[in-house]
Length: 181
Image 1 (cartoon, rainbow, N blue to C red):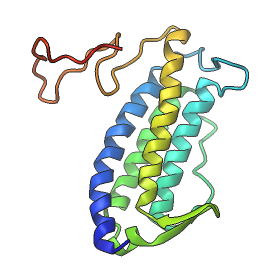
Image 2 (cartoon, rainbow, N blue to C red; image 1 turned 120 degrees about the horizontal axis):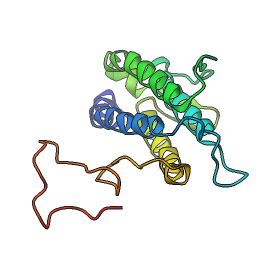
Image 3 (cartoon, helix red, strand yellow; image 1 turned 120 degrees about the vertical axis):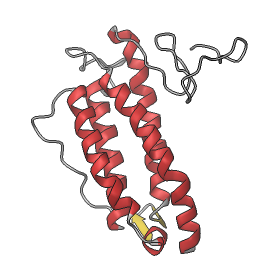
Image 4 (cartoon, helix red, strand yellow; image 1 turned 90 degrees about the horizontal axis):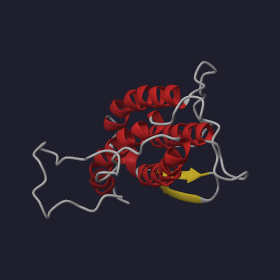
């Protein structure tokens, strides 16, 4: 990938990463206290384990883009032991990494990075993997919410529990509303 192509891809992916992070944080914050050990099946991760996995892994991918190598993931402080706490820690750490990502050169974004011996892609490509990974596991976590007694926030469109108005805040005209889920 050329540096110019890497920059194009970066300019496309970074706003998506920011948009998805806000939704993921909202889902994590929706997990009720004292229900964080919920798991739909014995082999499933608990809500707390999923939130931890999402946050640490997304930051790990961001760090790999920044440093152009995969190292040990960021440690979650022992003082962070609830989904709401993880959501806050995740948001703070995400926010700290964003200016560093924005300052990367096109050449840095195009640098090939070895992903634990499984693939060797331009650094910028790992932003796409970070997005897909978080969205996948966020979907799992959102499916835990109703069985835990929580409401499901709007994600891309409204949920049965939360309306999702258009970007400009105006009401959705009749007949133009997507189906509620």
